[in-house]
Image 1: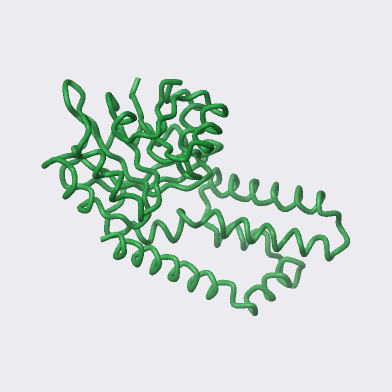
Image 2 (image 1 turned 45 degrees about the horizontal axis):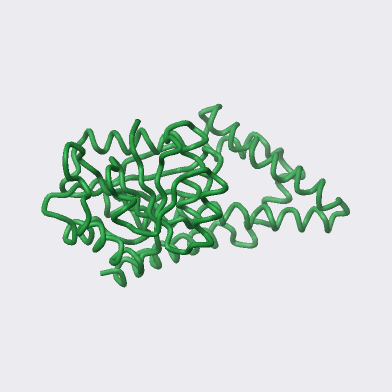
Length: 273
């Protein structure tokens, strides 16, 4: 079984830990590096994993070292990794970075020469095994190492491989994407309450409709345009609602929102340099 060290016990780190353990892809000897003692204790009790505050300690003997910290904290983590026993002996470790906006070259320049690095952008639905991850190999990552990381991440969702130049766009679409859907759900539930439904009933109606619509699109093989048209009868209720959404410039708002997210991801990358 692949030995995995997760550095960072925040939202994405916890989502990965939970997903890996739930899928059986990682055993209880998975190591988590978390410098905040109280947070480390929470993770230890919740998941039954070993927690340490030392990067070098967590990295020893790991096949995959996953960096799941904020971009501003990456420098310190990589500096500690470079001084550790990472990749020494029979094991060849791979560093997997989930830090938003941080290019692989930045990590490669701080690690021992030729060290394999793979950049990943995932999202929080990993918590329930429904994550979406995009991966981009660094200069020294081999095909079999990319395949290993893909296999691990497939245990917590779906995976696509992209060029690193596309990672800011990926961040805008799927990395931040869950928040967009949560906002839509929030707005629809509020509207349902305004129509006289209870918040509980409104929430059930909206959430199941969202889940069912996603499943229908995935299983039918039809496009969003085709499925929307199938629901929209001429001069019917759906047409009336869609007319108001178009009047509210929903398409334009999403376009601007994703572009803003992409720009911010690029800015974070520039700051991290």
